Image (cartoon, rainbow, N blue to C red):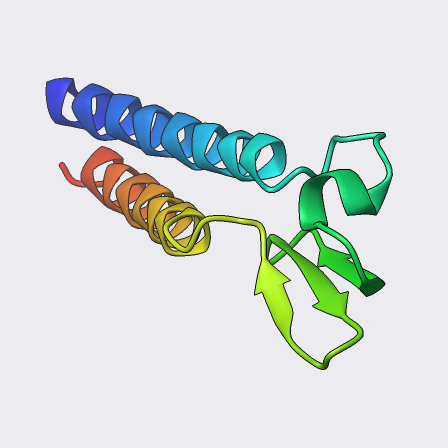
Amino acid sequence: MPTVRKLLLGAVGTFLLAVVAWVAGLVSGKLLSFRPADEYCGEHVKALSWHFIPLTHQCSFTDGTSRELVPAWVNPLFFVSLAATLVLILLAMRAANRP
């Protein structure tokens, strides 16, 4: 049973890492900001688009360009952490069922 406990603690740790990465993306991507878009995107903002999964917040400008506000490392870290959580839970279930 110590192996099961270690695997489950690892699963909790990787899940917490996923939550921290997602919250860091929310904060650094200005998704929780109640300020006008031109204060954090700059002038000439045409539109804003955002999604929570995958986490994205884009400023589209009148000249046709766009800028992503969420750092590039957030989504890969989030999804890899969730996958690791799932793998560790499955390994813990397998270890718990062994005689």
